[in-house]
Length: 187
Image (cartoon, rainbow, N blue to C red; front, side, top):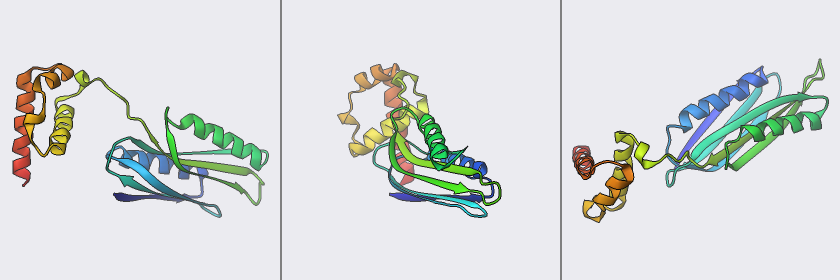
């Protein structure tokens, strides 16, 4: 398990939401796992403050993200409706929302109504055929499988794996050899 926190405050609602989305995308895309729980804190005043904390479970792997949208409107209901509509359209297909928060703010002088909608989600990873995997991706997958089988290559059907990846049996044997060498170096 790993706990990550993203926070930004700004006088600009747009700047605050964009910063959280971009920062979280950069960091979460490099992490394996799924978001098992999240907490979102939104506060308004002279500055808008948005803080999102997520707990990542390394078992499994999904596309993880934070979506944040804002809108203005004639009143709170109008602004919220627009922000939620934008948020829904920014979520990837098949996304499962872990947590969400919606907040509104009316500026004191201009009486402009803002709404901010934030969601933390997991979504299925893009599925790419095994034959399109790079050597590095293929070895990473083989290394995970070997780790799960206590690094015993005899449990693998080399011919079937070679067919699935569209490579020769020799390529798979070489991959396994390299994985085992790396494992020995890491000890």
